[in-house]
Length: 393
Image (spheres, rainbow, N blue to C red):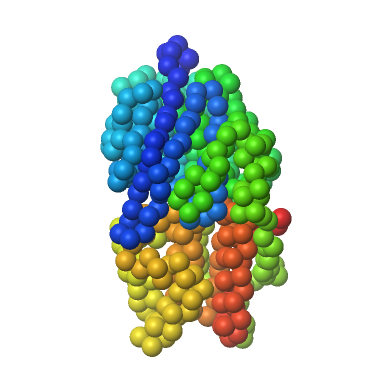
């Protein structure tokens, strides 16, 4: 069996200078300077909507900046296509982890290796390095959330990634699984001299695992430096204060409508049309505008009812009202999450299920999300509103 460690890889440093990005009149990034060094974990932090996702899109080539430059080891790579960035050693882990569900863990890594012209028998070595060798013959769809994320990182390693962009890699994971992911991240840094950039909202996690941090606010760098110094900054402390989180709970047992008339699923286990369900995948139509996403979500509602629902969700999420013509794919992760929630609320239903609506959100944004759900429930006294939430801070 070929060992994946036989190939030496050079460290990769990234530098962004003066990066600016506009979407119409909205300026998402304003002259951002950012550095990621080999052998370090750099955290990209800040409130939802601060520009973190937009910066990731620019760093991996999904978006081209309107001004500024991006360099890898001094080479100007501004605007290079994502596949060209991948060839240069940049690997990205998305919030919605992307693996081949019907392939085994080993086949997932082997497919990545073969796509790069590398020996498929290296797959087992990368799985062992990621700590999931014991699940190599399990189909990816049967893996736990944490093992799927480790598998996704193992695939990036197989493709010779040296700089890792990890977008909320531990969202919704309990503490022991969060430690598994970031323990592996530290292993990458210490044993492979990798450069790691992570988006993470939990401050204690950032303090524990990140060497440095860059705090974004309203598209600009508010503060950057060693992690403890960034979180000690008075401006950061004021903006990153904890918010109160409230959770709605449903009693266990058979789920029926409030009047007891019917189960919420049909005989084949499918949700009935009277049920609106926000899945944890946060699916939106990325190529369509915010307005079109809302219209598609509420297409089955009578015209007058949809108009009322649309107005209500825009009152609950006023920043969406300011972005009605913006493509959903260019929104930040937190904004897309709010759009997915708003789309669910636009549906005409008797019961609303919201699955992990605050996953990956900063505390203040999570509190605002729950306040919106609470208000929605109060405005819909004849509907059932159920929230599944693992974060009980």
